Image (cartoon, rainbow, N blue to C red; front, side):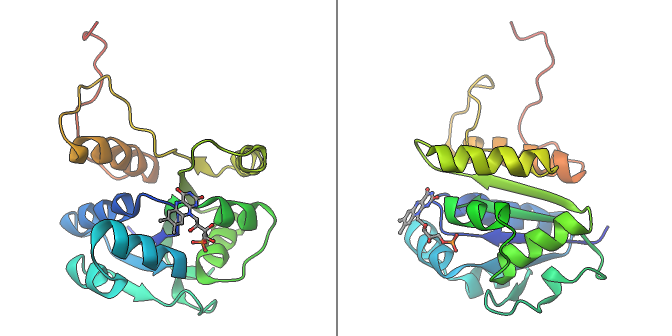
Length: 189
Ligand SMILES: Cc1cc2nc3c(=O)[nH]c(=O)nc-3n(C[C@H](O)[C@H](O)[C@H](O)COP(=O)(O)O)c2cc1C
């Protein structure tokens, strides 16, 4: 398959992006990493690593947020999916308004115009109406919205279980086979 672009923006939950990159690496799926400047803060604060360290640990190609000409935003490159994980309300708003002012928003808009898979993992609580309206717009334009809201029906025991719940949904939507976490069989209740 082609590359997967993983963007980490400044919403809380950088660990979701980190875990997604780890799984892609385990599966030998090539990835590119773009981290916004706010995302750099949350990545460092919440996971204790820099974007450079994360890229190195996960064999991901690090791109510069300021370089709107980066490969992640190339319409002709073989990129199968763009996943903004986690996705801030700011980045959601910019994409919904068609603003592509950095490599994350540009990659998202290119994904939409090229009809590539665009997945966003929003996190905010509560959502403002503007967030909800923007997500409705994006959803109606085929963006997959996977909120950072793990389910509890599989009886998670660790934080890793909760994170993997979301990662499994992302992988399913990209079309990557995975057995991360338990799948509901229908016989549980
Ligand atoms: C510690 C911290 C946690 C944050 N958590 C969230 C969040 O969960 N959701 C959100 O939309 N913004 C959150 N923000 C605010 C964003 O980082 C801010 O809106 C920023 O402008 C987003 O820019 P970006 O979309 O370019 O990354 C947080 C900021 C900090 C410093």
